[in-house]
Image 1 (cartoon, rainbow, N blue to C red):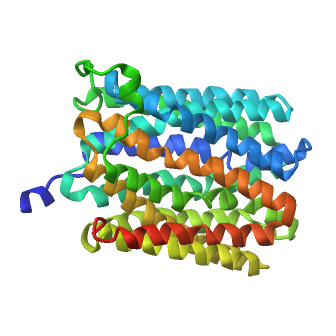
Image 2: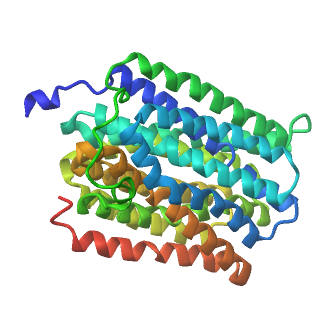
Length: 393
């Protein structure tokens, strides 16, 4: 056990992987508040904004099993590089001032997102020491989440700046993606970062391999992650519109507060899940997210919004780092790409369901009831966690 604990975590592969993930997530983060505002300015209703956000999720979700198979048979790194390149190229469609163009762009970005995340998680499973997977997951997801510290605030500043506007945000997003491609390709220097020879063909057909489910534990981790993330569109996509409706100014500070919490909390809480158990971290995550969403409806100031963001990101950091570590613990090394693709399907599927739900509820009942409804969505996940407590220790 001592030798396992002393295995180095911050290897060149892990450092470059984290840097590449930061750039890919930064490219995404700068568009989070931008696309809902841009679509609204072009005349889109809240429901249509939800459809635009859901288009990103649906393509990412549908293609994950195929991307996982491609990762196992070709190259985990190659899949990740293709993903960030597709993300950047897709943003060019946003320069066309039409809601349908944004819809198409977001759908194409979802394809890139599926590749980028599936390849990244597979590389992480390969390079993270087994005894430090919770810690590694915390740092990894913390680096991903750190992109939301300043990038959304920068986007809002550029949108309102007289010398910039929406096009400046789109150009910045594409630039981050290009740098991400350049950093990702540096991983090729290190053996083991990507597979250079394909795995032997299975006796099963390629289609059966793609649709076959991974280990039950990976499915459990994916289901719990879905529950943790289904409320995220309410925070990431619609909270900025809610704040503007209520006249709350300087909302960029919300992203700074919540993003700082995200990057600080994830490594610490990932480390704690190695010692306290995955179940405790996941249960705390559901509880804190529900509390944060209930707080939003009573917040009338920027300070209240920031407090809600801190609580939400703490819960999200706790839960997602623990589910990722649990999935890494139980993924079959021979099907790591597909296992991690299945696990990460929770992100786009929760975004798809969450985006349509939140947009529809706002259209019918308004923001107040929408936030209360998504807060209640944490209850089923908490129940599943408690029922599987012994497995999650």
